[in-house]
Image (cartoon, rainbow over all chains, first blue to last red; front, side):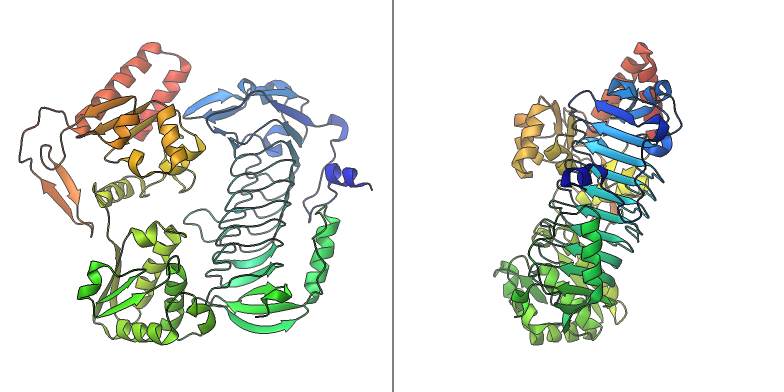
Length: 297
Length: 270
């Protein structure tokens, strides 16, 4: 398969099955304008659109400020009755796309707004552009692949909630913001570019793979879970060096990431990692695996 | 009394111990303290970057545990520097965890304009202290998404009403630029920085001096205030109620489905 084909098809992303359009093709929605105010459009989900005719899709309600408008005010729609959605345009201010989706697929040619794929439990989302904050927050299954950058709180728990992402996978080719994987419980997040402060904050499980540089306070207050850092890290005083070893799962994880359409993960390293355990201010069963030999003090 | 700060402040003169930490290391020190009070290990080498030694922190922990009633007070040096709410969260958590050993409290020293009162009232009315969105007719809470500074920086609002605050003096440049772009209405007893860039300034009677009301002390104890002086200006409450009545009248005269919908939203909010 050529590289471009791999990008558009994106094969199978960690169990988030990529449905083909089938007899009905896909539902294509073209965003008509550039928005100043955020639009809340949780109806842009395969679960909602999948069984509707084109007329019904056009009448779906979206929220601008405190007022409801029909979807047709903002989108041109082609196709109907398909669980494959294709969105086109700069949707950077369109929030809640794919919220709570259970199956099907969304492909976005452009940027996406906050809460993309939040609380989703199945299906796949591919963004050929940037995503914003709260990408895949509290998701429990399915997969998201962002080819550009993402905002903060990727796969995080909402304020006051005890568990963030509970399953599935989030792959980001670019950078991400602060508090990535906050209170994550299960699943995989892989970020190729740099991330902000507090990556893996209060993590409870799952795997956070950081290929780029991380801000300060990575893994703060984590109780369980694994953070893999390919670049040297500044660690909190509450992380204690445990050992240097070669865990097999890292090799397998890298192969799986490559097969999922993630670009080549940069310079080769010999899979030797330094294991730090913490955060000792809490349960302390989390681990940070630092790959770069420069971190060997 | 133990003072922890990045520089010698006037408070240091009356302190028994002064711990000078490097700027931006609050979270690291507090997290290390949380580990030490539980008798856990910490990395002394990494701790050295905070400007404090393990011995100093261990001594502090021993003193905290010996106290019969300890109190942690903190200000904007903690809450407004890198890490922001997580620094405050760390101190509050430390306060909670200290109660396993002795009586302990942690309390922010709040700024002017009765911030504590605003937090207390919105919390009992909506369950959330700030960063609340009412656009769906019920309160939603998400700092970073619905907080004023973030809404302004992203340009997510097309009108602003400012009450008991002066964002024009304190907020970052992009937020101030957006205040200038959209219609901004300021209610304040005096001309503020925000008034100068606002479309409309309405002078109101100063609460507590010319207008009666309730203020909340920093420990959230409410006080009723009687006005000491008369003012020719209306109170904040009177101005807002009049604006609200005029909006409602205009919306109901239009009788469009959109207006009815908006009115309904408003009704559930009140």
